[in-house]
Length: 182
View 1 (tube, helix red, strand yellow):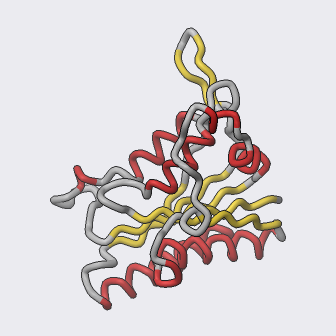
View 2: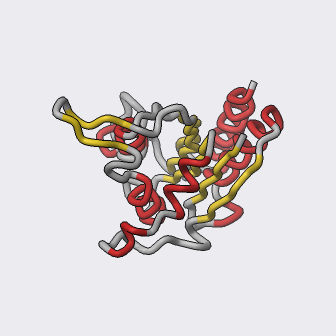
View 3: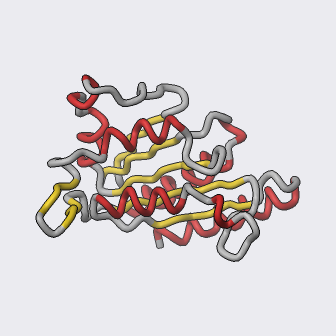
């Protein structure tokens, strides 16, 4: 089993999404004995998509070779970091991970497990006053759904509301991460 671990937070070791994504990877790898490939999009970012970059296949080949993909996705300004968006632009490829048909688009990348460690500084869940501003989970559900994958989410929310809330959110997400592999 191959596990592709994608980190996109710019805050390094203090990043909640990095801590949770690592817990997920460690848990899944312990059960599966899988090989882990780590791609740090903050330390080694992909350039924004250009026409010549469409021919580059490294990111999509790495994605397609993985059985499980674990993504650390912090919310920045209501959506995913630009580094993560640049990676997604490389894996959503017509004729490779999806195709257009007479009845609409068809995902070609199913059969993979995608787990997202999602961190948010505030409270953006359903029913919260800021729910309409949440565009990380909704975007990732749409993007991966488009290529035939239903992603799973481990959420750490409200991490900027104080040290106690941060610790509670991290502990809850870490506990959820451990249950994923069981």
